[in-house]
Length: 183
Image: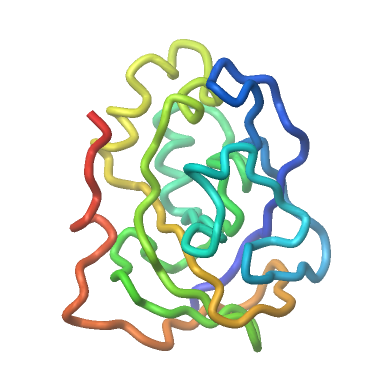
């Protein structure tokens, strides 16, 4: 059964060498019931609204299975939120999702897959150290990107909530089909 492992929001804005001077990639799990609205997790922030946030990028989902792959590759634990995701999920192949696919999280929240995440240099700087060199290419090459989601119906969610795919448009492209490598 696919389920929500964690709902994450920014812990703090961090200095960053990018054009905004700060990043909101440092996310961590929230306790208890969390409100999801049209623009995502109520307690979350996007420092770069040109590339993150808005109605079509209200939430970012990442799978625990993909995080486990990267833990093995990088030799360190990657807690929920480490990828900048709002939703850490388990038992759902988020990279096989189709554009327009809809998920119900818990009893009320409905979200729709809109596009894949495109890794950026802010993400590479967040990874840090020797792993940062070539990170965007490496992350892209593995195709463990995770999708952005639009909120169709908001409400409260919490870690442990079941996720059900309620609609999967068979004729729509998958998130990896439309991914354009930033190179």
